[in-house]
Amino acid sequence: TVYSVQGRLVGTGRRGGLRALVGTAAEIDGSEADAVLTSLRDALASPPPNGDVPLPEWLASAGSGPVVVAAVHALVQAFMGLNAAEVTATAFLDYLRATAGRGRHGIPPAGSRSLADNLADFVTSHGGEVRLGSAARSLVVEDGRVVGAELAGGDRLRADVLVSDVGLGATAKLLAQDDAEAAARMRGLADTVSAAPGITCFVASREPFFDHPVVVVTGTRRVCLVTTPTLVAPELAPPGWHVTESISTFASSEDDSDPKGELAEHLADLDDLFGDWRSHGRLLQSATYRGEWPVYRSWPGTDPTERFPVPGLALVGDAVKPPGWPGTGASAESARFAVEGILGGHDETARDPVADTAVSGTREG
Image (tube, rainbow, N blue to C red; front, side):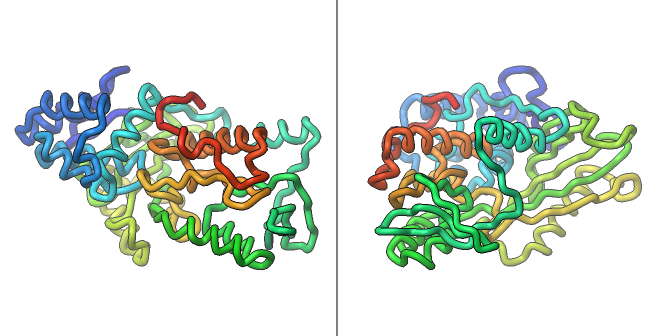
């Protein structure tokens, strides 16, 4: 990952990306980079007493100027899915701890579908069955325990444990037909979290807009991250073409009511970042993630860790991720915790054995 700070690309070496980001931004706004970095280092070693304040306020108290705050804001947008003002200092520090040493990225050969195909092959080779196009209509509850699912086509499947990754609210709806008490408990969990909306655009062009595959961009209206996967995986586009993906948060993650307006702001950023891209590029697709299909299903710092709310039911996904972890890694960690609980029999009693021990950054996925 590299960073674009007022048109300057920094952090292009193998180490020191955050230091380069803060250092360049501080040079522009006149703040003391060393003081800011020392405050961050000290806070990582020992939780700060004012860690519950919004991140920009904490950064200002540590000596950050407006360009430094804007730079960290872009970092938060890109990897935590929120605006910096919506994240506490503690949540940001948890993120830094959890992702320490994990700043490099990769593209699966032939694209992300290969990951799903490999998983399906593993399941079937071990006697399992993968059913596509088989939406669940409800969860079947008997004597207070989830025992299976009814599919939209009418089939009923029974299981010792049912694992749901569709989010807290959607799982509550699936429970509602068979067990009002269990559904109410799930809705109570859902009410404790807020989702993070966002927009992604895909642009095709003959030449890449950046020479680096992952660039965090600062000082924009909305866009925070620009990736060009074809720089490392050219097979993802026809010969002679590149695909660029741009990502943005909403002005307020609590308000996703104006997706058209948010998309207009996103495209205006692309005009600034990519120049005359409309004349030699083509917008392939724009995708808005909100409602039941947001970017993230819970805000960092407000992560519920109750993964066994009802006997026979286990929850996975970023709605129940461990603190500090973002995105795909968060979902993978939540799945590992669920597996540990299932193997330990905790789905029987609706207790979560790792709710109090899933400390960010202390366990490898």
